[in-house]
Amino acid sequence: MGRTVPSFRLALAEEESEWKEYRKHLDASERCDFDEMFAIPRLYVSACSAAVNLVRIYPIFMSILLHHYRELKSIAEELGVKELVVCR
Image 1 (cartoon, rainbow, N blue to C red):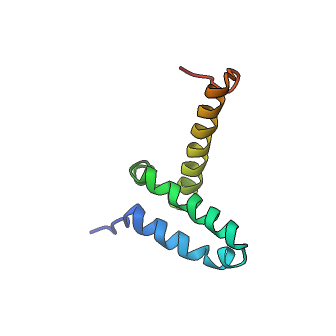
Image 2: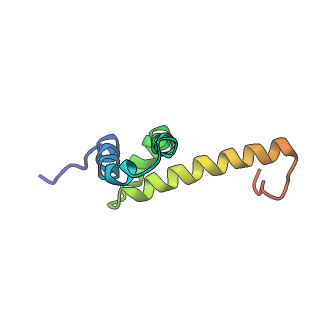
């Protein structure tokens, strides 16, 4: 039998623990922002799991980028900026 791929939730927890040393050297307010940022991929766990990427940080980064892009797009729509909204 082949090896099973661990769940992305476990992979995310492992990745987060590997960033603890970096997090430790941030200011308190930056740590809070870092924690909030690292919580974003939990919103996209099914997409990250489906990606089956061997480099687990890639789907994490993509989740954060997608989430921030969607927030930026929403703000742009509220302000009436049409250049940012490309597809509909």
